[in-house]
Amino acid sequence: MKTPAVVLSAFAIASLVTPCAGQSVPPALHSAMQQRNIAVRRADAATWDRLTAESFILVTSDGATMTKAQRLAQMRTLQPDTTPPQLQQETVQMLGNAAIQRYRDGVVVVSLVWVRDRGGWRVSSAQLTPIVPDSAGVRRAIDDNNARYLAALKRGDAATVAASYTGDGVVMVANMTAWDGADGIRQGFAGFLAQFAVIDGKLATHDVIVTPYYAIERGTYQWTLHPKSGTGPDVTDNGKYLTVWELQDDGSWKISRDITNSDRAASM
Image (cartoon, rainbow, N blue to C red; front, side, top):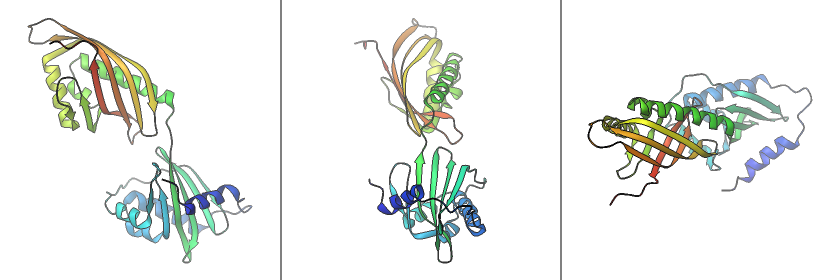
């Protein structure tokens, strides 16, 4: 979807016009910025409405657009967050009767165009730009998570293994139905580790594709399972896996989708 011309024009002005020398942020604008930031956090639709122009357009981090009416309807469905806004790297560029406010909020950069409207300051357009995480840092996080995951498997700790997944995660293992959601994943690992002890195991990451909100890991595994019933020989298996990691609000990574396939021929 193409970005509307009104938004492109606003941000083009921000990059081409030199800000007025020595022009500071007016107190009324500073107050409006603070009020609107708090309104977004607290899902305060009335305050957000008052400080947003009727022609408002939002370009979301995935390139979609929302009108003021659409964003207002969405806001009315949200739950309030009482924690104060934590804006990072905030800058304000004054352009006469307009201003460009930019700041980092989590994994996105927010750009707001403020204009003098109806005797006050209101936001006419907004753009969310996702920040792609540092690939080396993501790889370290995945390696650390995999080490904890494997250690928990070896000690039979199903709760810790299940905690590696998101609440709506899905585990897809061979020859059985998928384990859906937190309860399904907990039950799946509890049942598996009640039957087998993992006496040896290795995970080897081959590559990781990093996006702003997800990381896709491809790798191989090998392990030896010992039946807890005491009957039957140990089971040795090796194969490959594809794991989708999802970035959490606290900066950690959890598994959203997980699938494994054995390299061993199926017994007939």
